[in-house]
Length: 299
Image (cartoon, helix red, strand yellow):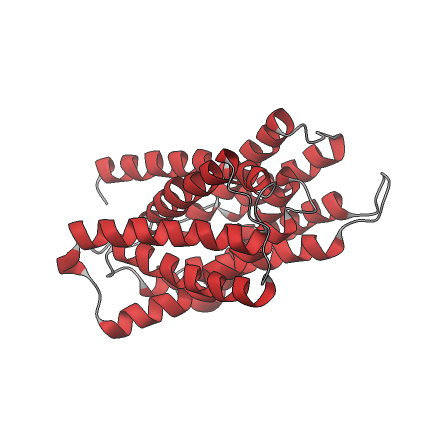
């Protein structure tokens, strides 16, 4: 990889980290007017329409064959759609900052999945230590409650399952997607996720809550176009050029952005316990990413 390409990769990495960090607050805002499955399905469907159009207009000659389209659509369905559904559902109960911090265990799950599925990314001692540290941070966040009311155990588990599912999707892209056009890879997986979520919404939300306010429309448009489309496109581009665990390190920055945005915009409490748990999870991301190697690139 040339020095200019590597520099561009780090610029894209920083940009996607900041933008993705805003996701959690925007989800919480949109949930004021939309039920979670309809909201997440709308986000994915909008992203799919935009990026299918872009891929068709700019990369038609690089479109995958029918078998590869089916494969990535099936990967995108549960591996991307399920995390959407779980995260949107969980944010009805827990804060945007806590959700983002829990999802920042993503690199720990990625390290384990990469060890199992990728021959060139073994589970080294730093990665194993970072994985343990991540779950110590989770224990600090969700241990015995010090405030009123019980710990919302099920939403917390839902976010951890979402992180594990997303990690598996990243490793599958790293293993099988190096020769696939990034635009088509993005568009097909988001389309699969959208279809998956539409089916879930039809089954579990037959009478959804939908209030077409300016807030709901803006939230859906931002998440669908800027985040779902733009950030996933950036993610898949990065996964072809950098070590998958290094790419996943961005979630530490995303969680930090989310925690402070949640406190500023949504008045979510910024307690010592929350900051300690966040610090441990972010530290785990850094430790997991030690000695990460750049991926081989197919032009």
